[in-house]
Image 1 (cartoon, rainbow over the protein chains, first blue to last red):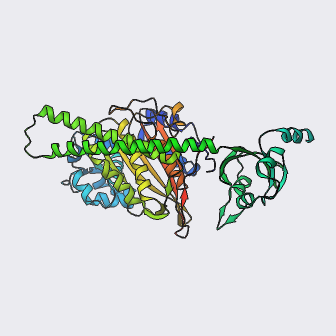
Image 2 (cartoon, helix red, strand yellow):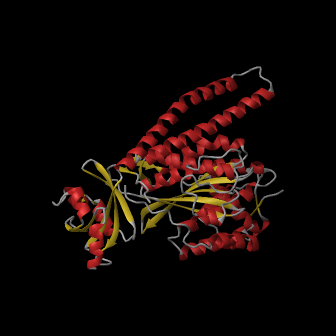
Image 3 (spheres, each protein chain N blue to C red):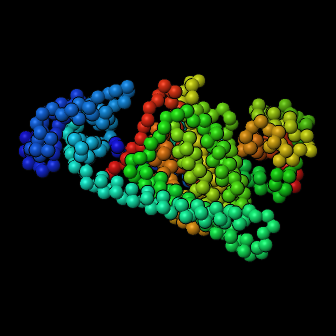
Length: 137
Length: 356
């Protein structure tokens, strides 16, 4: 029955404003990378994990906003096919790119992927951002 | 200093200076009238450390917080004991305590909670009947209702679900207020808890054209606690996100492992939406009871303002902490951190009562 301290509000009160400004000025990917950097500097700031998730969430939502939705068929880009050494892929990205054959749509890729839905979509969005894959209109 | 003692001596409130072993170093007349002059077993009990669990008096000595209070049962009555000062500074060897008899106040609170629990229980019965009937009518294949009546029945079903949610929140609230939130210390597979919460609200999300998905693997370590209560906390958070996320929005439920070297130390659970966000001025209040953000729910109807308060109580009863990150017009992420306890840490803990 001891007294309970209220949960601490965000330790760094400027995160909300910084994230909002950064998204407006530089876009979600730049903001995401900056937040990952910031997590190294503020490892104990719990709210920073939340801000990172907000940005990741927006990246995946934008990826899903394609007019064909889950029926869209990602393809390997010409740049990836001719110059794949340039791409520094993680193990997850490498696995996912191996599934892309120009025929499987997002829905099927989600079924085949061993990763959770969100992680799969986030990695595909990242591959698109890095121009390793294209998502035709 | 002498004059301070003289003032304290004359106060009608029991005050005493207690050392870290539970010994009484000084007491005023009111204390002596209330508790007598002998050494007190309940003070010795509060000063004990058993199996790593510190008594309330030890907590007072260990905690650096300036203001701290706790309820203690003494000889059949309930006293709110407040630490008013440390006698010898930082590493105090003795502290001054203030005793307030709150027996009647707590009994009234208990009666209020019991009454709420009874009312809520009585409301659930007939509402379950209404829900069952609606479900039966709507599930009949080839029913001859035209589209308008089907729409109306579906609306009634949605509203009855909402009402059941509100009633359940009130029931949980009454349990918390009565100090009856008991958390079992059983191994909980968090991945299963998160999946169950997502699955239970998937239909609602689809109906509102919102993507709801898991963002974690299967390798989430176990925590000690209550499957039921943790599931409820996650469901509360996702339900809350559903209210404020527009069509074509996304809600993700994730889990990350915080490591200390190789060993997992804590799990961070996030429930993140692409909703309208919370104003910076309202962020700090959202975990308080009856507080709601100024944003209007996109799905119509308000709530009790208890959902997030209940989440906070459940998480804190598990030894965890909660916080929120929010960017207006971009989204909100509710963040829960739960400690990964060793399986040897068994026993039963109860939620702390928040006293002001």
